[in-house]
Length: 208
Image 1 (tube, rainbow, N blue to C red):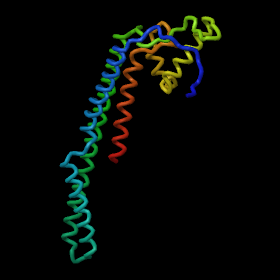
Image 2 (cartoon, rainbow, N blue to C red; image 1 turned 30 degrees about the horizontal axis):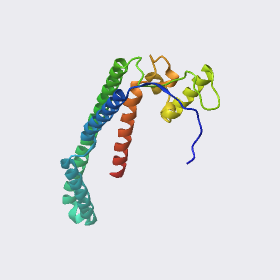
Image 3 (cartoon, rainbow, N blue to C red; image 1 turned 90 degrees about the horizontal axis):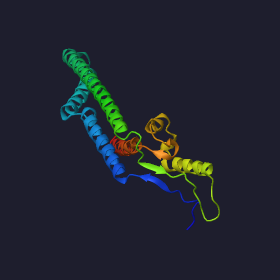
């Protein structure tokens, strides 16, 4: 069975309990946020019934318009009723949109506070670190500098595609002694959030 040959990359720090805890916290937090926002995004049954009634009223207005001048009085009443209902629906839609925006802002602020709390609780504590001290294989022994370059490459590959997301990962590395070969707590927390977020996005896409 083929594989890409490489020297062994030993670990100098691994905190599985912390990793599982942070992954669980991230998954639970994102699930709570998604269910909270779902309350604002999902249409209540009363609104669905109003939309059905509006469609039925629109069809009724078209029928009376086709009757011509003989149904002018009834058509006018229905048109006024339709305009009033459309305005009420537009107002309801705007209120729901405003409520959703407020809820999303609250969720965003709460997520920032939670991330900041995790950052400070695990400040300077690596949950995973590759050891750069004299990595060796069966044929040769690498220098300290070569070993450092190897563990940095291995760490980037391990975190890919997270290793290319930019400023978020840089923030997660603040306070770590060897940021190029070390993962902080926020990496695990955000990874779980991202995974759960993508699952909910897929479910939303299927329900469209």
